[in-house]
Image 1: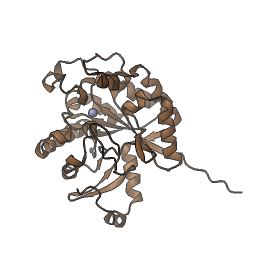
Image 2: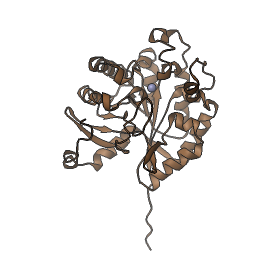
Image 3: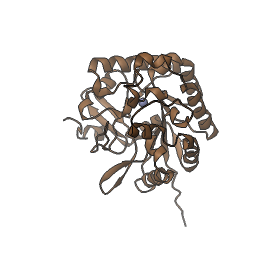
Image 4: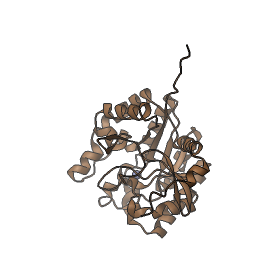
Amino acid sequence: MRTETVEPMINAMSIDVEDYYHVSVFDGIVPRVRWDQMESRVVANTTRLLDLFDEFNVRSTWFVLGWVCERHPELVAAIARRGHEVASHGYAHRLIYDQTPKAFRDDVRRAKQLLEDAAGHRVCGYRAPSYSITPRSLWALDILLEEGYTYDSSIFPIRHDRYGIPVSERQAYPLARTSGTLVEVPGSTTTIAGVNLPIGGGGYFRILPYWWTRWGIARLNNEERRPAVFYLHPWEIDPEQPRLKVGLLSSFRHYRNLESTEARLRQLLRDFRFDTVNALVEQCRRNYSPDRVAALPLPYCW
Ligand SMILES: [Zn+2]
């Protein structure tokens, strides 16, 4: 009797490389002119994550802030040298819908140049600060294409107070725009009673119990046969980071369970297999023939 072996699903692992004070909720508390005066912890935290991924032999994608790359090009070079993909988190961590198209173009162009110079390879992926491509900032996708980016990971198919397009696709897909077609790589969700709920990292990974993430990714992999896209920030494994004064909700979202996140990440790396986001993008391109892409409806024309 022939037994079929099912290959384990390869998920995408990604890290948004920024320091604790770059996070959008601290915008009004640590203005950009003060960034250089803050205690910097991004190199140490990123290096700890690099060592962890070495230990588990995992390749991943690092969406690095251009501002961080400008000050620590050797960190970006090390990410690339250690076999990972360097991608862009923009330059100054400004929410897209708060910028003009011209300012956004300057921001992503500057970041791409800095990152490519430091990494020594082409940068083709972008992730917006706080997933800020929403119905009012879809124009950003055309600018990304014009600036040479070929995939984006900024549209979260959920309802959230700062971001999200709940009706958008839940898996990587080609997104046709007037400037061309890019691959959109949404953060992962599971659907319960018709509502998309996040299972792929960040605050949801830290704050909710670990079984939620493990159950959600397993459900996505085994029932839907889709890979997950996981994301985390270097500051999320750093319980020693200086505490900044914010409101109760923001404080809970940022500081909750920092001391246990590294151990959770180790468990996640034991439980699932991961590769770069670009590997998932290539897989998506193989699944969609040009004819199929041409026949796709334009989902975001409103
Ligand atoms: Zn960010």
